[in-house]
Length: 203
Image (tube, rainbow, N blue to C red; front, side, top):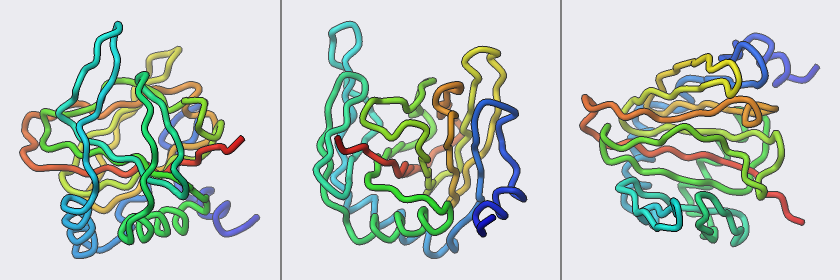
């Protein structure tokens, strides 16, 4: 048993069955988290997200960005994005995610939520480009927000608040059995940046 297996034996799985989700809490200092937020907010190539619903293009208030080791294509909501090269800050955060989780990642999808009126509806990250049952590491910066899981069959829900500078990882068969979302929170008036480090499979 290696060190990561020992740590995961102590860390509690948030899900009662059919998947693995670990919440690591804060993985950096308040000062570092503030600096990363400021850097990403001003240097990332943020774009309004687009999706195609019933053949009609919808533009979201939420902004997104897609980065990676290579110009990987990633398609979700019927729109394809091409990864930009890593920035120094993203490389540093990727290293934190890899060291904490014991996994490796080659890409990152970022979301910028300007305030609590912006969120994400129920979905799972099961696009064909992603490594099946691969780990997805989520780093949160900025406003604390509620994050929820819902079992696809039983409809059981699990809620976890994600703090500024915290890390959560979803892996194994989580995406096959659980949906997740970021519900709106009208009381939140400040911005949140979320980074989800992923593995794109190269064929």
